Image (cartoon, rainbow, N blue to C red; front, side, top):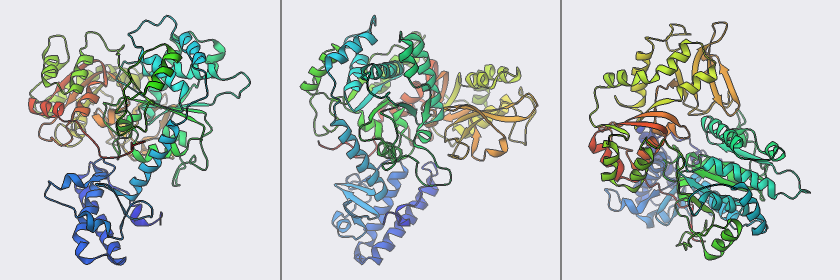
Amino acid sequence: MLDDPLLSLPLPPSSLADDAAAFASSFAAAVVHAHRAQGGMTEDIDVIHEAARQACMAVQQGHAAADLALLADDEVAIDLLALRRSPVVGNGQHVTPLVLQGSLLYLYRYWRYERRLALRLTALNRRIDAVDPQQVRRVVDALFSGDQTVTPNWQKVAVATALMRQLCVISGGPGTGKTTTVVRILAGALRLQPPSAAALRIAVAAPTGKAAARLQASIEAQLQRLALEPALRALLPTQAYTLHRLLGVRPGRVGFRHDARHPLPYDLVVVDEASMIDLALAAKLVDALRADARLILLGDKDQLASVEAGAVYAELSAHCRVDQAWADWVHAACGECIDVAMPGNDASLINAVVWLRHAYRFDTDSGIAPLAASINEGDMAAVTASLTSADGPRWQAALPGAATLAATLAPHYAGYVDAVLAGSDPEVVIRQFDAYRVLCATRSGPYGSDALSRQIALQLRRRLPPTGAGAHWYAGRAVMVTGNDYALQLYNGDIGVALTDASGRLLVYFLGDGGLRAYAPGRLSQVETAFAMTVHKSQGSEFDEVDIVVDVTRPRGLNRQLLYTAVTRARRRVRLWCEPDALSQMVGTRLRRRSSIIEPA
């Protein structure tokens, strides 16, 4: 049964390794109990226990499934025959705790998420809007009038693709013009709408409040730059939502307000920072789309995947493949010639993926763009050259003691502290705080975000006023929400700052998709000081300057995507605190999560 408690046990945070291992063992014991109760063979018990433990641990590590083929060369080998004959292992046709698909072993819940997502996306991609390419060409040419750029213009290709398909996946690194592309897509969709048709209903969203607020600000900035007629501008969405708010959180109740039975009312849904979306949320999003709705996913295929299980966007955007027929359509619709790249076995998203390949933004003297490119290519020599050049990002190859490091980093928050002391408007203070950030590869350890955040806070409190509500609260304390609070509409990763209002009362201010909101400190039960944060938590954010701290004594999780994500959070300046061995490990290790959303068409 779908409500079987064995199938719906909540998984502990993957960062709590001891708790996660204990939970996996407990889950495996429960699966073995079910195996026995349903008449499973006694000699298979050890195999079932280990398989269930591996499947659970895989999810805790961010994978959708455990790949049993990878265990064959490990100290553990799983007998597939024993699995297939167990009553607790199935192929998905019936509800069982475990699902075996080839060499991938899933927990049933995650297999079901993945199948629902795959089927829905494949169905979306098979639908092409009945629109004349020549009509699209006129709209695209008008939107890009006077645009000077490289050839082919991948922004034009992306706009044309999104205007003609029900599904479009757009990937681009920082500065490649994703938001500009989005605004042009929205304007183009409105211009293509027949005058007699109902007004096009559009929603734009992002996974977190910070990302939604940044998306909204970026759209507003682009609207000022593009020459759009007032009537068209008035039809464009003026607010970006978090995905939780878009889908309709119901405090105290399971599930969202919008699902397959109660779909979203929108004709077009655009989601930015899609690399942050985990498997479960992605499945719920596509479930909630109307059958005729269009979906546009934007992100960066080279960024870290979601904190929770799945690497949905990375898998969807991994290949940019186009057949000859679609290349001809694109040429007719925007005038750009693109190379035909025939699909291999994973053809289900053919023609839907566009990579934006030219960077327009980054301080030309910062060296961030070439460093990011070298990281992506796994070119250690080029990375080292970028980090040691006189005018590029700075590299500190030897880490001082944690307290000394914190004392070195704290002065970079001087502008923020000045804004707090001046009694500036909360929105101004928040934006000043977002000008700089310390990013850590790990949460724990002396160089992790928890310890460094505490050390930096001690340094900053020497300048901050001694007001507050208890030992932990004071004006100028920056905090991060560590768990979803649906009643307050605060979500994991949201950033707030504590400030005194005109009456001297201490409040914590958050700037998100609903604008500026304030809460009494006592209402916030899941927050932590945030003068340093993990790279994972920084996804969806940008800062003028960042310091990146990597602890070589904690090598687990060091990979290329982590370093790339950290570096590309900065707009102007990067400084890396990292020993050479850790840098080499990150550049040389590409993280690959195990899943199978994309299947042969």
